[in-house]
Every structure is written in structure tokens, then in C-alpha cells.
Image 1 (tube, rainbow, N blue to C red):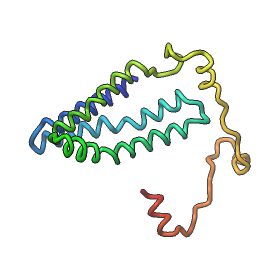
Image 2: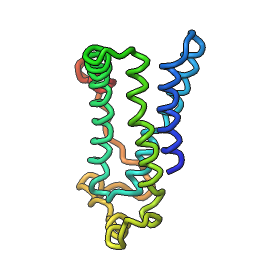
Image 3: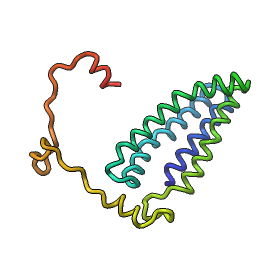
Image 4: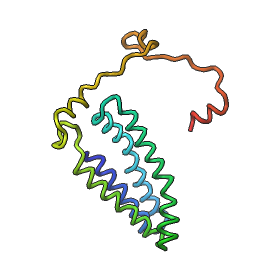
Length: 171
């Protein structure tokens, strides 16, 4: 809870730093702080997903979080350049300042609404706690049932990988 709150707050604060500072090294420091604050977001959200969601829905939640990060990145130029700078005639500094306000609001919302575990949260009832905690692991598939205890599941390594698949898999 505290790490995500601080991360979002510092992330927003460093965006303000980029908007209202000048000079290469000052902007470099603000962007480095932004990167450091942002770096912890996905690992923290992975932990939240593991603790707060039943096993059956965790991958869906992670997929939505990842997709929304990409959607936000895709729409940011439209919001900044087209709406705030183009239509509303704001400077790029004011546009960045406007974009930080939801970040500060999110930091406050995370602090108020999130707890480290469902058992700590007053809004989570006992049925929900049990549903999250008592989710059984998924059934083993046919090929996994032969895996002996303690051995990692190994799959054959392909000897020929088409060029286009290699490019898709790497990025």
C-alpha cells in the first residue's frame, strides 16, 4: 500500500518537475526520478493481483492492467498535443501539470482504498476473503501430470523458428 502510494505520488511529482524545470541536467534528474518511481508499478500491481484476486481471474486482471498501460500511452499524445495544446492552447508545461492532477488523486485513492491484504480491509467481507484465499490451483493438464515432484516442466526447444515469429516473440 505505502510503496504504491509513494510510487504514484513521486511519479506525478517528477512529471511536474519535468514541466517546471529548465536545463539538461535538471530535466535529466526529473526524468530519472520519473523512471525510478514508475519502475515499481508493475511488480507492485502483480503482488496486489496475487493477493487480492482469486487464482482463476489473476491473468485476466494482469492483462487488463497491461493493456490499460498501453492504451494510456497511445492516448497521451492525443490528449497533450491535440486537446490541451492544440484545442485549449496550453503550453506543454501547463499540459503536463494538468496531467499530473489525476496522478495525485490516484495516490490519495490508493492510500484510502487499498490495503496490503484483504483481511486488513474493512470493506471486504468474510465471504470475499474466503473466495480469494481458498481458490484451488488449476487442475493439471495431461502433459503436466507426468512431472515428478521438484522437477521443472521442460518443453522441447524448437530447432527452426520462422523469422516473423522470432520478431513477434522478442518484442
